[in-house]
Structure formats: structure tokens, C-alpha cells
Image (cartoon, rainbow over all chains, first blue to last red):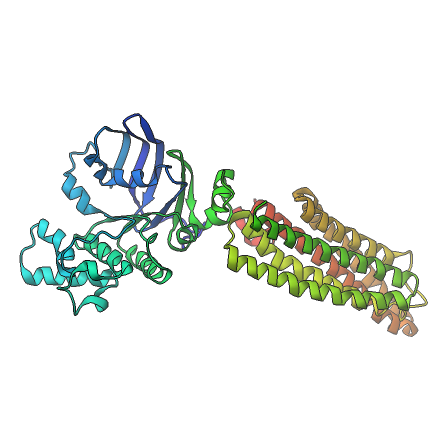
Length: 260
Length: 221
């Protein structure tokens, strides 16, 4: 865990400045600014409807499938504007993977779920695909459980396994950032513990942003925690500080369950 | 009021009860010495059992709150500090017993000018103020307690030197002086306990350790 006395050594991976977002008339993000450091886990907390999930979706522009969306402000990855930098959206989504609240494997075999992304990006060689699939499943701590049944349907797996498969699927295209939107909310404590261990292992090479309603999960896995409220940033700091000595009264009230 | 807040209130009230017992013990200890009263000394010993019982009870309350409520921020600091304040109060009781059981050994008096009484009273005031700072969330008062410890240390040092001089000049008073050295050492320790409580109060209120500030560099600013 990062310590307040240790200076941050990792560069800023994602930088957000004065971000605005609305669906039609409904304002969801209202002037958010924050930096996310590489190879760190940043937890986004806040009450339902505060803009956490929308914020995540802005990073890989998957909100663009919805109509009547207005986006303003700057959002950068490695200093390049995600919205104006002439970025290829497909490549952006390869660099910034996402895992959702409910595991959503394709109705295909375990192998095909993981191989899907690399195939899309042009990997055709069977041996190379095999290697990518094994590597991604190992990184997602799932290989030992599924290596003998790669051809079986992914939908027959347990919820926790399905979620790790979704993580493996995201990892198979070598992303730099992994966005996780309440990845454990549908899982039991044992499956949750596995995913949390995995998050801590993955941050060695990945920048992770996780939205969670579980305060203890934010405390356990993240280096930084940001509290959102009504589309604004209330406070962002080292997780250790947020959970012991938050600066803002609202943060204190939220993490101690006295909010509202 | 939420159930958690009720439980925190019960912890706080438990600590106030312990503090009340500790303060009564200090009063009785002072009286036992000034009145050479074996029965008051005996009452101090009896009260100590109550403090021990409260320590066990409140330790469990703190552990339960940590395990079941996963507290954060001020709640966390309050419970973590309670786990430290409770044994400080229990130790105050032990020191009172050490002082009280010598109430009848140290007469006739050999010390001049009521310095022993002054040491007891100053220490008593520190304990009272540290408890008041805890109850009233008063950082200013907690800082006063920490400062007052220097005065008690000074008084302790001067009495100690006086006792050494007395022992060197009159071997007949060595036994009483030896007991008195233990008595003043125990008062001085009680003042340290009050200081520790005050430091915990500052940690609860300000979120920063007030201990060993020389090790904390900028954080101590």
C-alpha cells in the first residue's frame, strides 16, 4: 500500500480536466478533474447516480453507442487527448479494457471467449492463439481450473469463474488500463477474494480503475480513492488517508455510512 | 440514532466510567497518605478490581466493533485510541495501589513543605484534564496536559534529590525514603499515563500521532 510519506514514483497515465458529460438534459459529470497514476489501483466510490460508471465509460468511449450524449473537457491517456487526438477508437478500446458488474461471457467456449479479441486484431496462427489464451487465463488466475475444459461453454462456469474469464478476455489483447465497474458485486466472498488478489497482481503491469460500492473492497485493493458526488469530485487521496483521515466532511460521512 | 452510534456511545460511556473510578482511586490514595489511613488504602485496592473488570469488558467491545463494523476515519481512530486509553486507565489504578499500600510506611513525614501532596494534586489535575479533553473533544486541553507533564517531572526530580540528600544525611530515614521514592515514581508514571491519554485525544481529533514528534519531521508541524 502506498504510504503518505512515500512520494509517488509512477507517471500519470490518465488525466482528466474539467470533464463534463450529459445524456440529453441530464448532467452526469460536472467539471471533474483528476489524475490516475500508472500501475496503481484507483477506486471510485460514491452514491448511486453520482457518475462513477459514466466516468469509466468515458475513458474508452463506449458511451458513444448511446445517442444524445454531450462530452466536454479533456481526457488524456499518456498525454494524448482521447476525444481529439485522432485516436482510433478500436485501438483505444484495446488499450483500455473493461470488466462489468455482471459477468458477460460470450455464449461460446472458454477458449473462444479469450481468443476473440486477439482474432479481431488479426492473430490467426493457432499456436500463437493458444499461447495468448493460456497466458491470459494464467494472468486471470483461471488456467488451472479450466485448462482441461477449454472447449466447454463459458456459460456453464460459476459466477466467479465467469468474471475471471471476462478479465482474461480483456487481458488477451494486452491492455494498458483495466476499467472495472463493480466487478465483484454479483460474487460470493470467496470469488470476491480471488478477484481482489488478482487486481493486486495485475497492477504490476496495468493501470486499474475500479468502481465499487463496497468500502472495504476499496480499502483493501486500491492505492488511491476518489469520492464522487453529483458528478463532481469531492476528494481524492491515498486510500490510507481517505479511510483514516479524510479532509472533507462529506468523505467522512460517506465512508462511515452517515451520508445523507 | 444508528445502532453503530449507540455502540460507540456505550464505549465512550464505559471509558468515562473507568476514568471516574480511576479518579476516585487517586482521591482515595491522596487521602490515604495524608490521613495515614489503612482503610482508605484498602478501598483503593478494592476499586482496582473494578478497573480490571472494565478493562476486559471494553477491550472486548473494541475488538467487536473493529470486527463487526469495519470502522473508518474518526470512528476508526476513536476505537483504536480507546484500545490504548483503556489500559492507561487500568495502569493508573495499579499505580494508585502501589502508592496507597505505602500509606502507613512513610510516617513520620520526612519531606518538607508539602511537596509530596503537591505532586499528587498536580498529577490528579492532569488525569482530570485528560479525561475532560476526551469527553469534551478538547484539543487545547489535551495540549495543556502534555505541557503540564514537564512540571510534574520537575517536581518529581526535586523530591527525588531531596530524598537522596535525606538518606545520605540520616540513615534512619532510608527505609521511609525508599518507599517514598517508589511513591513519587508511581505519581510520575500516573502523570505519564494522563499524557498518553491526552496524546490519544489529539490523535482522535486531528488524525495525527502526537507521540515522538521528533521522529515525525514535517508531519509534526
